[in-house]
Image (cartoon, rainbow, N blue to C red; front, side):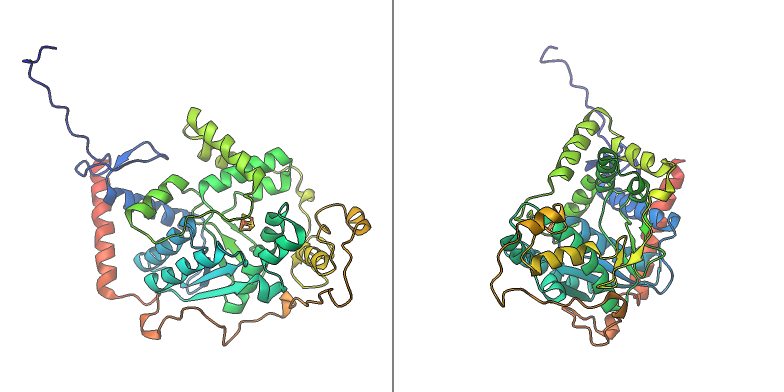
Length: 395
Ligand code: SF4
């Protein structure tokens, strides 16, 4: 082309939804180019639709949001607070954090959660492994080495969240597990041959028949979109990795999933749908839920996994519950007199709401998060209706 040839200006790209805004993101989930305002709208409203279709909440429910200070739980707290007001769910939202006792990691991330509590005006409760079990993760790693720390940590955290919820008088916990996490879990269950867990891991809500149920409102929300949302909204979150080894097996599943996505962009949703539609032929493989004889927590065995692990730690047999117990018992660490810990974990069935539950951040009555400011709600609903009109005009 000669230098005199007039250049034909390419038409400027516009948002695929509103046809006027400047696109800022290509949605990994749909391939659409969208502007910031439309991205916020579709991101939030898709989560709302997931919640409605999954029939996740009851009116006036007290709901604890598991908050770690990371991107997923920070966006979860922000979006749930927003949707609760916008769609009038009438939920009593509370932040619940677990302090595993990991110096240089959790202490810093908890500072982020404390700021989030003030920013979103949500009450915050922190429960620690040390107060619940007598052991912090730093102490566990010192005792057991850093090979199986995620096994200890995962088992103890699950119970700690439930215990914290009971203290708060909440029967429902929300976690920030996103679509990528769920697809990874489906893959891991296939690779392990864990058929009973395969279908359950895609449920939006689990534990309907237990004291505390759990839900994942981000079940269909891509991790990349969560990161973009947090970035555009300038949310305050903590992004450092835990100082103890990341979960190696999940790491492999993650790498595999990313590779799959490169050749099949819909891989995440496809895997979740496959998990959902999996017909579990062998229902009798699902262990019947009992109650742990020692601590009263749900368990498929007489003694729950947390009690076995804690017994091992208290007796100087940290491999108990991890390796074959005979092998662990054959090589106990020699414990000097008085060194064995006798820590009694409170019986789960006896836990009740603590009337004077110690909170990190308490919302003043006049600013309670489920009491809506009429003007604020009107503004929110106007923007939703505006956006809906734009979308209808496209049809
Ligand atoms: Fe706990 Fe492992 Fe997660 Fe660290 S990486 S917080 S040790 S589960």
